Amino acid sequence: MSLQFQPPNPLCGALAREIADAARELACRIDLGEFDDLDKSQMDELRVLSDMMLHWAAVAQAMEARLAVLPYTLTDTGGTTSLAICN
Image (cartoon, rainbow, N blue to C red; front, side):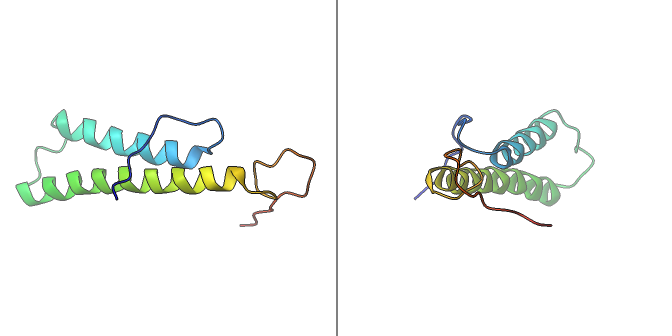
């Protein structure tokens, strides 16, 4: 099963979009030659990092979408008690 990052969904939070944006920015910077001073193995690691970030963006998006349909979640607007997150 391959996860693909989908276009932004209004029910999903910003985490997936932030991760995907960072992954695309890294890939763009690699393509523009910003890291040309690195050796081949380091460049390959950066490309793998960008791919992994896109994978985790898709995972985060799936989790956010699942949370959006459950009662008592962050996106619950039905007047019920919402989940509190404390740092």
